[in-house]
Length: 70
View (tube, helix red, strand yellow):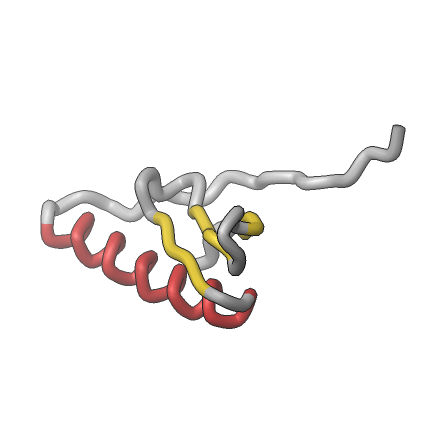
């Protein structure tokens, strides 16, 4: 399975990440690599919890991100 992960710079330094289709699935880290590793663990835990509740994992929706210069 693949899911969209969005990384944000944290005000205090480092990064925080979210998985939009997995509401409440968040993590953080000091580097991009740390943050991606941590969010992967959070995603695995989130999906295991859904399975334990008898729920199906949601399918990710296509998301498009772009920078727009003004």
